[in-house]
Amino acid sequence: MAYIPTVEQAEELLKHYNKEPFHIQHAETVSKVLGEFAKEFDPERVDFWRAVGMLHDIDFELYPEQHCAKADEMLHELNLDEELIHAVLSHGYGICYDVEPTLYMEKVLFAVDELTGLIGAAALMRPTGISDMEPKSVIKKFKDKKFAAGCDRDVIRRGAEMLGMELSELIARTIDAMRA
Image (cartoon, rainbow, N blue to C red; front, side, top):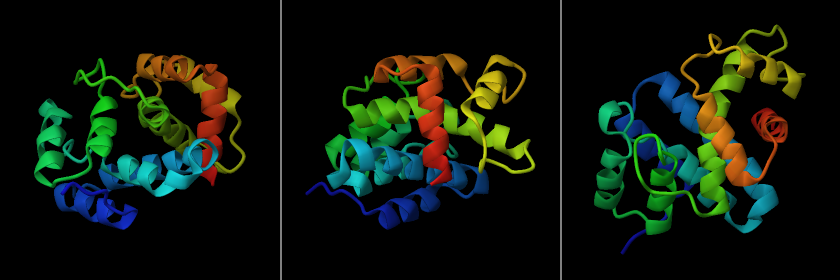
């Protein structure tokens, strides 16, 4: 029978397949951001949203060229819940996989996956980190294609559109979630 892991079980699974501190920290950040969004949009399922965030890149370190395709195999072999698997796979929509985000949570994951990297990089450049960061400073970095060049701005824009949010609102909400 398929199961939904707790956040702690999801973290153990992530760490079983990922050893790089950067990948683990990214998963923890995305997990916490999803948890903060869930408090507003799906308060009964905060832990589910967090588990999805923790597992979203479970295959990336081992199989970067087959990202999401390998996650599909791995999560099915682990006998995880189909809704969780769909959510994990949907964050690669139009990038590396063809599972479309349909649920609100999936759209949030799609939108914040790249954005947390951009915000995190911007925070590292500031003496006060993220504590007093304003959305306008992230938007300035967003426009500078050389800054955090690995963060795909088109994916962030598409995510904001999926959510029906202005880019500045998505950035503000994500900063608040990362601060929490």
